[in-house]
Amino acid sequence: MFLTSHKYQSNLHCKNKLRAPQGFTLIELIVGIVVLTISLSIVSTLIAPAEEKSADNVLQIKASKLGQSLMSDIISRAFDHNSDMAGGLVRCGETDAPACTAILGPEDGLGGRVDADEDSRSQYNDVDDFDGFSEKINSIDGELDGGYNEFFIAVSVRYAGADLGLANTLVKRITVTVTTPLGTAIEFTSHKANF
Image (tube, rainbow, N blue to C red; front, side):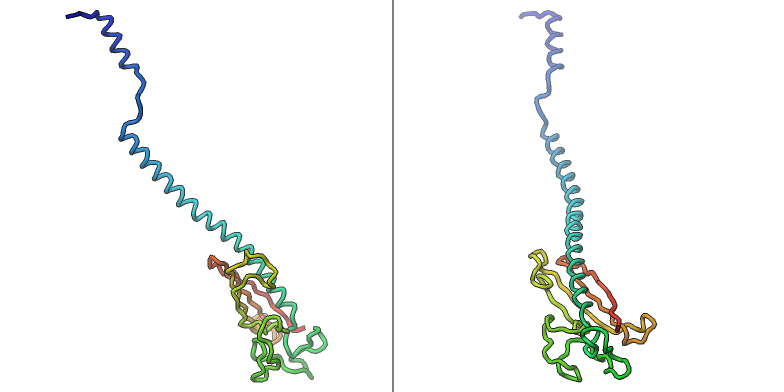
């Protein structure tokens, strides 16, 4: 038997201690994968609602433009069918003038409603014709881009003079509701006075 010197044995022992690790153990790999999976799932649950909220903000801006456009169109019409359509000389409800329309909505020729041909928005000539108007739209005038698909608008008109301390038929309240494709409903309200 060969005897090795003590110096040589201690050198071998030091080499084994200084040797670099050879890689990860199976347990270390599994723990790393589990930690990474948990981290990614937490990050994705935090990002998804923020992304949806971001999309909703863009849709709200589009809904605002759509609502303002329709409201401007409605406000530009005459106050009432029994008023002067040019705006000002004859106002319904005044002395020697016809009464303001009692039934709001497009005229259908029934029950004293004068016009029988107001069955589309392009034929509406006064504010209350828009009462009950609703439509799933692509654009208000067919001129907007495809980014307005799946928007829904609804309009209601009612007398509201009493809300403002006036005779009830002197003011009409117009409410335009625009619903985005994500279901967010945004209301726009304006008043039109009989003057």
